[in-house]
Structures are given as structure tokens and as C-alpha cells.
Image (cartoon, rainbow, N blue to C red):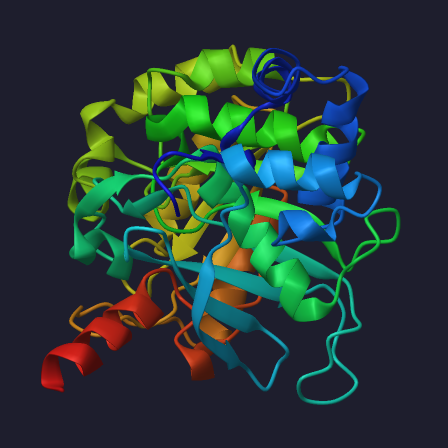
Length: 364
């Protein structure tokens, strides 16, 4: 990307309007045309903006560009899950995953509705013991354009060219990184995704997940830009310190107290994500502890069977173990739903594909 040019993908709506009026000396309505091409149209070249005159396109191309992410690898699972390894402008690699909401009619079927899991950081500073991304360490925060660029890369792959009837229906900020540690870029990305002249995502179709970061949670909640999910994974402080050593710096009791006071819209609930690790956090005492937490909150509990990660001693629960745990939670009047683990044949767990890629490069 030319260093002397403005990347249109990195401009918020107010910034684009200012660029159009003050730098290009154009009428303000031109910002809407450009915005639609960049986001709804998903073009990669300014020459494709055909409702601008040739002269205007040449002027715009002289001072601006469109930064798109390069697809380094794509893997499609037998269950329809599609994982992308994307290269950023500085060569860093990040992951995003498309998860089919409906069962595909055939392998590789791309016509079903999709949920996309997107990343917010290159690597992750939280070092959770069960996570491949945590083992990669932290490189840097992603920019607004890089966060939304994952959606645009997936849309291009799918041929998803009609924002009014999108294939990608839901977005979850649950990929690489901790979103609340990159809050400004995350908030800008949410505002851009929801802008009516662009992709026009509804806040009800976007969920942002945090492992529990005290700074920024209130600001995020008050923004009303997306639903909140909290990666709980441990129902007591001692186990939280073992599984999530850096997140545990905010004690569990204080986190739960903050969630009691979290601003929710009518009929909105917090989602508690709970990775079920056989023999580690799925015992009867953990059911009782979860019941005490859930009784304090307006929340639902998503149970996620552990997706085995190379280099850890953790084990995925058997179907029988998972069902036993789920039923024990039901008996405590907890709204618990098992979220099916998908894409195990394509290393779909967070960080696995990048780790495999880097291992292959080092062997080469």
C-alpha cells in the first residue's frame, strides 16, 4: 500500500466526509458514493467506482487506495465450516472462520446462511492455557479496516454481493485476540459495519466476546453496538487462575458483580461462554458453582466442547460426559445450550491454522 495515500478502508464515516470535502474539495454527497463502493460494493480498485466520472476516479486514485487483505489459505470442512488464513499489509497472519447456520446440502456448499467469527488482534496477550492463539503471543492490535477486512474477504470468497440479502448473517468477535484491549478500533468497526449506506448490520446480529477486562466493559455496554459474551470457562477463582491466568487478574466475584450492573436492553441477555474440558471444569462442584453465578445474572450459558489443541494435556469431553454435565445444569434451572464444535478436520479452533502454517514454514 502506498505510504503517501489514504486507505479508504481505514476511514470512519466522519473521516471520509472530511477527506472528501477538505482534501478532494468535492461535495459532501460524494462520501456516500465512495462509502457504498468500499463497503457494500466491496470493490478493490477505485476504477470500479463507475458512478464517479473518469476524472474524479483519477483524482481519488491519486490520493487514496483500497486496502484489502490477502488470502493465504482457505480450508473447508466436511461440515461446511470454512477457515481463512489472511495476510495483513505488514505480512502478519490472522484467522477468520465462517460457520454455517444450516447444514450444507453437499461439501463446499456456500449458499447456506453463515456466522463469521472475526479476530481483533494479531495473537493474544491473555495466554489462556487451552488456546492456540495464546501460545502465539501478542504481536499488535488490528486496525478498523483489518477487522472489517475479514468480512470483506469472506464476502468476496462467497460471492456475497447483496448486503440487503446477505449470506453472512451474524458476526461474532470471538477470533484471535481480546476485543476490549483494542476497544477504539472495535467500536469504530461496529459503527462502520452498521452504517446504513454500507453493510447495514443490525446490532442484534453482532456479539463481542471478552474474557473479562475491567477497563472498557462499561463503555462497550453503554455503546449499545453489539451483544456481550463473556468467556467464563471457570466457575471459581482458583480454576480461573489455572485456565486463564491473565484474565484472572480481575477476580471472578468482581467480574460477576460488574455483570450484574451491566446495561442491557429489553429482552437482552449476557451470553456466558463455557469451554467444557473433561475432568477439569465439568464436575458436580462446578455445576453448583455455576448455578450460584447464573442465579445472579440475566444470562444464558453456552457449553462449548473443547476442541483438542496440540501441546496441551486437556481432553475433549465424550458425548456422554457432555450430556451428563448439561443435564446437571438443567436440574439447577440454568439455561444451558451445547454449541456444536465444528471444523475439527481443518484446525478450526482459534490459532490452530496459523500455528500449523508457521510450523510448516519453519520446517521448510
